[in-house]
Image (cartoon, rainbow, N blue to C red; front, side, top):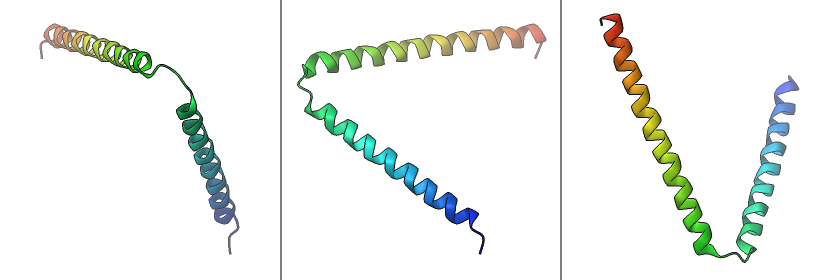
Length: 75
C-alpha cells in the first residue's frame, strides 16, 4: 500500500485539528473580554459601511471605464 496518502491525510487532520483548537480558544477568549460592546458594534458597523461604500464607488468607476473603452473601440 502506498504510504504517501496516509501521511498526507494524517498531516491534514493534525493541521485542521490544531486550527480548530486555536479558533475555538480565540473565540472563547474574545467572549471573556469585558469591553464596551456598543462601541465595538458601532465601530464594526461603521467599518462595514465604509467598505460597502468603497466597493460601490469602485464598481461604478469600473463600469464607467469599461463603457468608455467600449465606445472608444467602437463595439
